[in-house]
Each structure stands twice: as C-alpha cells, then as structure tokens.
Amino acid sequence: MLALTRKKGESLVINNNVEITVLEIRGDQVKIGITAPREVSIYRKEVYLQIQNENTASLNVEAMEALKNLF
Image 1 (cartoon, one colour):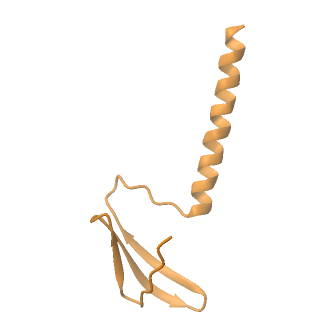
Image 2: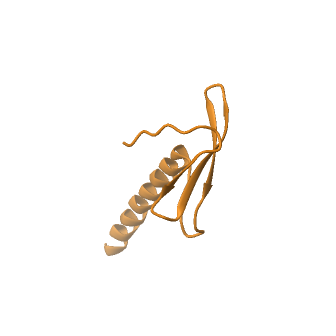
C-alpha cells in the first residue's frame, strides 16, 4: 500500500486518467472527489465486497442448476 499525505485542495493522479482530490477534512472524516472516465467503475469498498459476494452466490446457484439439468 502506498500512503500519501495531502492537504485540502490537493490531488493525486492514478494511471494518467483518474484524479483524486481532497475536498474537505472534518474531524476524522475526509471528503474526496474522484474524476475518472465513465468506463472506470468506482465503489466504496463495502459495496464492492457486497457485489462480489452476490456474484459468487449467483454463480454457485447457476452451477447447481446446471448440474441438476444434467440428470
């Protein structure tokens, strides 16, 4: 993991096309802004993990249905 220090209004750039800007710092919360191409998916980690879990569960159900159809 790369750890960087930024102040309000400062940014960092990832892969020449994603810019992350510190918009606000209030107590222990930091508000960030992300500028990226539309084809780049951006999720909060807890949402991303939930999507991954649901996709895995869906694949398991589809695999079981496919096995049932074989018999």
